[in-house]
Image (cartoon, rainbow, N blue to C red; front, side, top):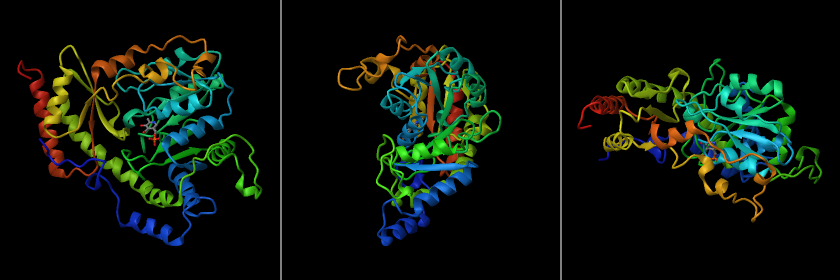
Length: 396
Ligand SMILES: Cc1ncc(COP(=O)(O)O)c(C=O)c1O
């Protein structure tokens, strides 16, 4: 049955207004659509840095590109290891592999699905140089605890905030500002969007410069010569995208506030034994609304089917399989038949039991949207409360 709930794939579920339309037209009419010598991309970088309280920001073609540039900016050696979580988008690990680094999967908190200080500590080895901390679904990972483990060992931290605008970490910091670099995505499904796009923040001027150089062929344009200082790609954002992004980033605070309101109503509806809801809801930005079930008392497939039947998009496990169970990892499908860079590591096959349990049997996610009307919030919460009440009964 269709309930007409808004979703992020079309206008009713997005906040795209006349400001974005005017911005696109302004750039089109200027005739200058390229970031080089453009004005909107540097303005976006300046405005995003200010908004996030960071010293530097850089814009990229995608979130994956921003993460790739972040890893490249660390200037690591082939075969160095980067700790990554097994529940995330492939964009978290693509740049790691492309840089000849070995992704090492660490296990996750059984409720939040985020890396923890303990799981990171257990995964650190002599070649660990960095960790990609994903704030999964918009829940704030304990990046401060992870930093306590990493900093004394010289392990750098990249926060993957693709799903986490205005998420707060346990210390109350804005996600993305605790690690060495924070990366954000503007892809279609994210809190704010330009279709595709990425942003990076850092307080370190050297990291910002290297990340920018990496996204523009290693070419220091400001020096006025055609020199390629180092290896790089073309990951530039265009002025058209930047113009839209400048407006979209200003909408993120409101989007998150409204998603929290929906989540609060759903939290009340779903409070019952056998369901564990996201901790610290006031810090969560709810890219998705996660619920962890006790599979001994609740049939996950049945629960997901019932939620879908009332018109709310729900998923069992978020991913079909943990990231490391995909052929790119199991068959090392990277560069020809070389198996590189995995061949540079002595590590065996990854095994992260908590991550496998989340994907395989305990995690349910529901798509949440900022544009639900008060009536839709009420209806959806009432439906979820009924579903939760039925869970314990024999005919649920
Ligand atoms: C956690 C996470 N990391 C990285 C990415 C990659 O971002 P993009 O799709 O903008 O390349 C995404 C989203 O797709 C994501 O959800």
